[in-house]
Length: 140
Image (tube, helix red, strand yellow):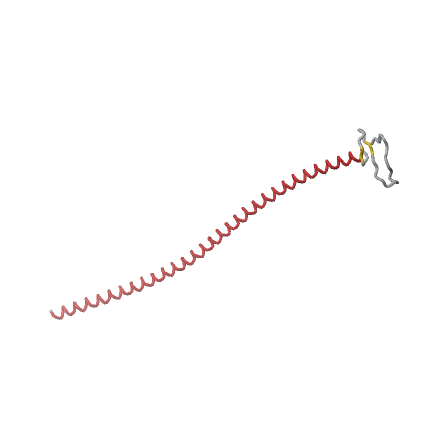
C-alpha cells in the first residue's frame, strides 16, 4: 500500500489511524487491507448467491421427491386396495363354490329319492296291474 501523506496518529496514541490511498482519499484502513476487505466482501456476496441457488435447487429437489413420494404412496394404497379386493373375491368364490357344491349334493340326494320313489311307484303299478289282471281272470 502507498501511504502518500503518511499516518495521522499512531497505535501508541490509541487514537484512530487515518491513511491516504493512491488517489489521495482519506481512509481509516490501509489501502491493501481495504482492497482485501472488498475482495472478501465480493467473495462473500458470490458465495451467498451460490448458496441461495443451491438452496433453491435443494428446495426444488425436495419438492420433487415429496411429489414422487405422494405418487408412490397413492399407488401403494391402490395396490393394497386391489389386493384386498382380489383376496375378498377369492374368499367369495370359495364360499360360492361350497354353497354350489352343497346345492349339488342336495339335488343329487333329491334325485336319488325321486328315482327310488319312481321305482317304488312302478312296482306298485305293476302289482296293481297284476291284481287287476287276476281279478279279470277270476271273473271270466
